[in-house]
Image (cartoon, rainbow, N blue to C red; front, side, top):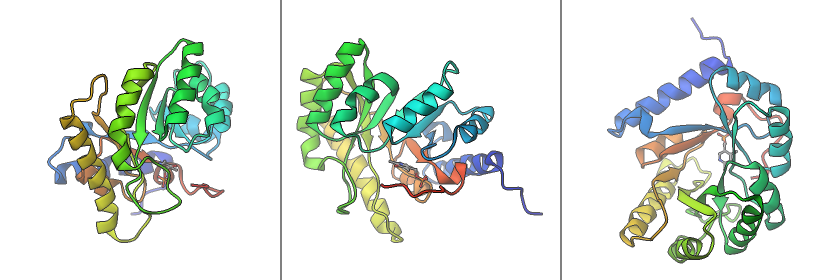
Length: 239
Ligand SMILES: *Cc1c(COP(=O)(O)O)cnc(C)c1O
């Protein structure tokens, strides 16, 4: 008998695949967090996900995040920005996001810090690292991350670094995809040895609908899943 394709069954299937990938890697299933990525999906789809117990969602545009957060205000949701952020959107991010996973340059850190001071709050951030050579991917060059983290710890105390994030190369070659994830974990391990003060590197956000199992096998602590939970996107993602 074929299973009915609902958000509930898709979510259950993803959780099962996460658990299986963890088992293969000798990890416990609770060592991997699921971030549902609701970008481009309607508020009704988010309500459906909330009814399934989800309360933290990934978005990649500040304007879309703001509209959804307003529509679903007062329900204790957490909003995670995962997309490339223009510096002139730092104000919106500082006001509306619970967390930002795409911090990739100094001028953005400066702008966010300034706005966060105004808001009187801090923001959890992950530094996005470019682990592939694809020109379309954003992220900081791996060799620049150590100095960047030192600078954040010294000058931007509103930004609370929790770890690193990457997007793997978009390729059918599993070895190439895996190499991106491995590069992020190795960078994290290397940065840890430097003993950077005031910086946590616990979290590795890596893996999406098409590649999350490889990411888990390479040490991901958080997978960002959109289409495999919400269904196909009706308009293309510019990233
Ligand atoms: C859209 C997006 C995802 C989710 O992609 P899916 O393939 O729909 O799972 C994850 N991470 C980032 C940065 C994204 O922009």
